[in-house]
Length: 122
Image 1: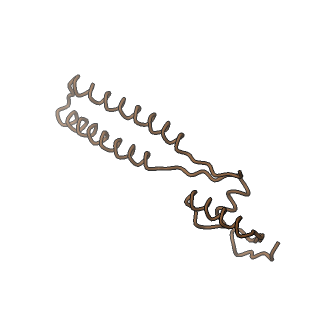
Image 2: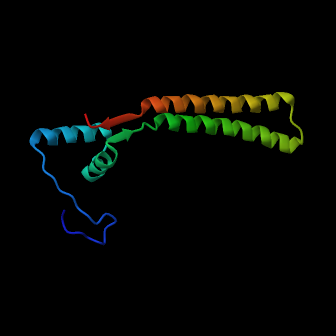
Image 3: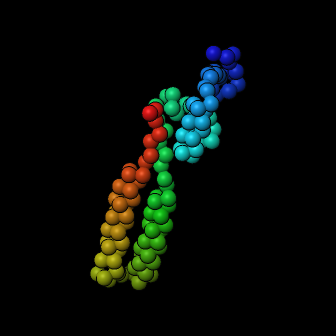
């Protein structure tokens, strides 16, 4: 253990030695996990035994789809408020849009669960 620095949020420093092969393997695992900070990688591996990488691109696509559906629902609500009435067809459209949102959320969660990559000790 190296001396402590109480000004830091993590005041205790740990040092250890590796050979060239181990260093290359660590660098490759860090690159695969998308982590370029060794301290972050080492903490995750030492405390949890694995690094989980999640691809959020599916969630971004979901956000865009929900936004589009929200715009449609808002247009129907504005029409209903302006005319003080809403047709059964418009109401059905709102419910269909909400079913679409539910299906998109379910599909995206399933996809995200499959897309979690764990990098651990092997």
